[in-house]
Length: 395
Image: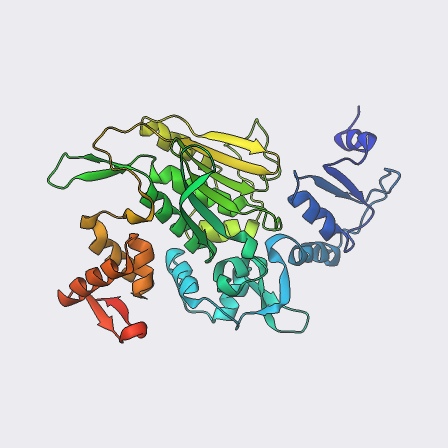
C-alpha cells in the first residue's frame, strides 16, 4: 500500500512542494516565496535525491524553527524604524479602545505582545512590518508608501475622466475608514420614511463595501511595490481590487468557506479591532448583504496577480440623490452632530481637519458646525487658531 509520503516523494518537488534536508536559515526564503505566490508545503528531512533522511526534532530545533517567523511576512523588523520615531499614538489608543484592551502595560511591552515590535540586532526596539502599517505615521513611512489605498470616482464606465480622487496614506484602520467615507460620499442615497425620522439607504449596502475594502487591505501582497489597493467607482459599478490574488491555499472548492491570512499579524490585529471575523465568512457576508438589499451578487474575479470584487450599481428612482463627487456630504445633515460626538467619544479629541474628512464638507462649513456645537454646549473648544481642538462635554 502506497502511503501519502511515498506519493509525495514519487512526484518530487514542484511549484508548491519543496524538500529541505534541514531547517536552516534558507527556509525563511522558501516560506516567504510560497506566501507571496500560490502557497505550498515544505518537507524537512528529505534529501535532494528525494530520500527520507530524518530531521532534528529536539526542543531547541523546534524553537529555531519557530524563530523563523521573525524573518518572514509581517514579523520582519528593521533597525531603521525605531518605535520612538513618528509613533502614531492616536491610532494606537484607538486600536486599544476598539480591541477592548486595557492600557495598563507599558507601550513597548504591549507592542511586543501584539507582534508589532521586537528587538533589533543592535538591541533597540523597532517596528515589525505589521507595526509599521498600523502605528507608524505613514506620511513618513517610505518603506510602505506603496501600501496606501487609492480611491477614484470616474465619469462613465471607463477609466478616462476622473471626477474625484483620494490617496489614503494613513494607518491600516484609518485607510479602511476613509475609503468607506469616500464610497458613502460618492454613491447615491434613497430614502425610506416609516417614522417621523427618515432613513437614508446607500445604493450598495455599507456592510458589503466595508467587508470588501477590509479584505482587500488585509490580504494584499505588501511586498508588491507596483500596485496598490484600488477603490474605484464607475457609473455602473464599484470595483475594489488588491494585489496578491487570493491567499495561499484557497481553491475554487473552499472559496468563501475557508479563512487563510496572507498577513497573519495584520489579520490578527484587524480581528481584535473588530474589523474582520476569522471564520471565513467575508465572502458570504458580502453576498448576503447584497441579496438582502434586493441586489445582484458581487462578482469575484482573479485577474493574474490581482483579486477584484465588483458590485453592480442599481438603477435608483428619481428621488435618489446623485453622486457629485467631493461636493456631496457622506453624512446627512441630521446626523452630523451625532457623527462628531461619536468621533470625540472614540478618539477623545479632534481638530477641524479631522471632521472635514469625516463629514465630507468644506473646511468653512465644518468650522461653522463645530462653532454651533460648542456654542450650544455639546462640545468643548480648546486652544486657538491652528492649535484649536474639540472634546466631548462630560455628561
